Length: 375
Ligand SMILES: Nc1ncnc2c1ncn2[C@@H]1O[C@H](COP(=O)(O)OP(=O)(O)OP(=O)(O)O)[C@@H](O)[C@H]1O
Image 1 (spheres, rainbow, N blue to C red):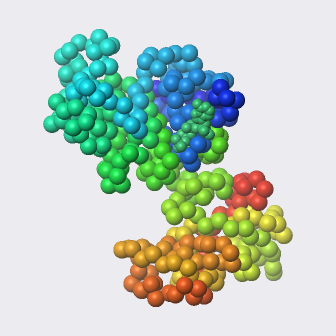
Image 2 (cartoon, rainbow, N blue to C red):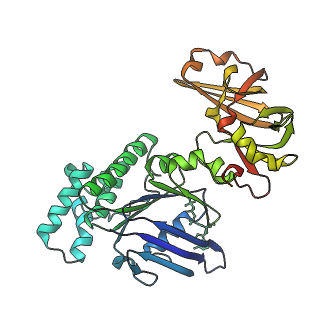
Image 3 (cartoon, protein in one colour):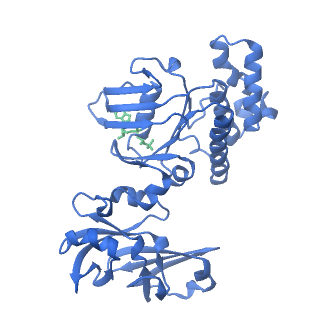
């Protein structure tokens, strides 16, 4: 059981490149925290500093009640699961899982109990005599997770553990890891998990909270729902959500005591609560954001926009309509009843009326890119 706290943590690599800039983060005991962000944003570097595999240039890392800046990885109470599994090729699954415990001089019967128990949790009991090369990628990754479980760590660290698996396996492993977190909690082992991924769907489905990073800085730490409904800035808005939020330059204008977003020559009326915040921006440029799922093709649903259809993707229960507003490409994601219509009939370039639900829109300051509705 352990809280993990980072205080003003920085990383400057020996070549002088500053990868992590003053990161402050408090990960609660038993929490599933996901680090997410684009390639190169320093998710792995940050995780490796918690693990002790990368030196901290300045700041402090705490695990439980210990400051661990100079504690070797093996004494930090952590277990790490890597993307490439990092199994010993010459050892059986059983011995891969047992190895660390043998080194720690744990009695053989206790080792056996822990290995059997982890194997059962991960459904790999039948594979205990196999060597890594005799297994699929998904099975190897389960062994790698098993090897972490048997150590009963306070903190599990996962570094993109599913990126080498195909799409279907990724989904089933993702569910298994989330389940494991819950099972351990139920069994009284309140394991803190820190999970690095660049896949925002993994982040949204697995995290109790998500830490969104960009260029070595934290952009927002929040629950998946809050990130979705109240992104702190334009970066988080564009990163969380699939397909991503539509974002475009717009202007705030006022007419007859009402406040509008002027977008590509059309005026979209803001509801009263949003208008109150936006009226300070009248006459100014802003970033306007609307999620694809908040655009409809049904007149009752909101303020109108005329776009030119570019592509229609119709799949099962959903339709994605890509359309241009001037030079800017937007996506509308329609589901439910909208589906009864054959949208494929919309030709490339057809002028079409779309409707944005302005209760769900977001507006970001043009310079600071912060969400003006959260200020
Ligand atoms: N040993 C190193 N020396 C110098 N720069 C490094 C070193 N390792 C990583 N970097 C740089 O630090 C930044 C963060 O890298 P890191 O691997 O932590 O990013 P990441 O978010 O995990 O990316 P990815 O999703 O691609 O794995 C990158 O710009 C990377 O090029």
